[in-house]
Image 1 (cartoon, rainbow, N blue to C red):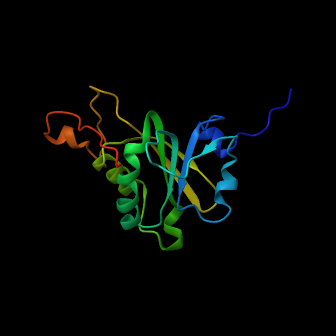
Image 2: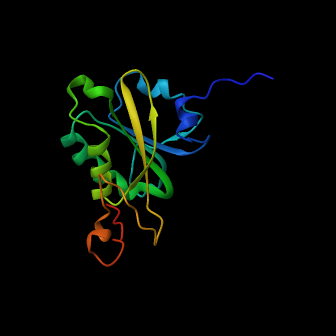
Length: 156
């Protein structure tokens, strides 16, 4: 019995039929992911997405692009952030900075995968209620002294 090699989408756990939104992907990179048949969502109005993928090169792009996407991530969905590996393409990003920004916006990191020779990706999910997350690169806002989980607000 032969098996085909796992695609990047397999490693990212993108299931057939899931609702996908991709932001800032350079030409050719989406094809590299090997996405299964999915529903590409362009209009975010009222959307609840299974897989959101943000491509950025700088901290400024990450800080501008990450927060508006969080409200659209389904409760069990994933928000992937991709940035150039080894500070290629003039990137000022590395794993610690990406984690810090995610935590600042109430998301926790889980899995890191290599997209291709240039791009790496880190998965963020919504935190589990009641769980205390300890990470040397970031702290969730309500674990800094706030008394409860903030209510996500979806833009209209």
